[in-house]
Image (cartoon, rainbow, N blue to C red; front, side):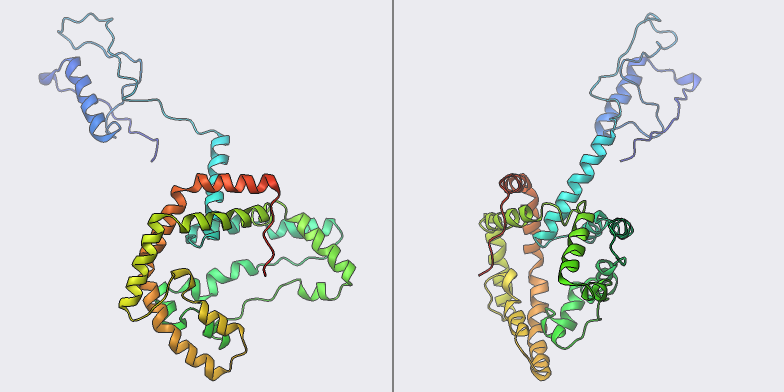
Length: 325
């Protein structure tokens, strides 16, 4: 909401003089109905005085003070407030991303938080290493169908994406710009290169505190899954899928069977058959999963302070994710 207000002034016709009491009442009732003065009215400032109407019995030096809670002074936003707000937005964006419900705006915010490639290149050069600016993280949003199509369009063409990857139906992302250079280095030089790169991106929100995030998000997911609202949303999704003719136990695992088959060696004929299986299931899922996703994000936001506690504890303890297997 803008803090800018109109600078209009009262115009009182000579034949319709009103008492100051009526003027004050007009402001008070208008403020109660709208929450702020009309854009064409001059707000009464806290502690200001209003002159008595001509012909009234009120002494000229009597004051009429607007209630302090009716027209509070405009709040002042400090640089510290702005920084705290930005840090909180970044924190929530990363949390939403790691639990699977980021918005497009939050994905863009996370990318903007990365150390700029120009800075990394300068930092690497100062450390004596060759580095080519790498823009591969910017490519998917503008080129990959997962981001350029609606969820319904994507499911209708690519299912869950497993068979589509096996069939090479997606555009090829750009190659790591520094791959060839690293490949030309000895093992010791390569390790030194990676160490220097890591040092140059320590300000990156996706690099710093990574283990604490992984541990805390894992614990948080377990807690969210037991929330009554999430349990009910999963049951609703399960019923919706059953009505469409498919039996699956959880929306987060509906695509697992296809990705597991994709991870094995598969012929193109088998991949085409798999895509035909995927598409109707993916289309039903896209329709059924909307309430579940909304509930999941709502519960995440309602319990975000609980996550902060888990994250702070993981960070303080230096916890690391358990090794797979």
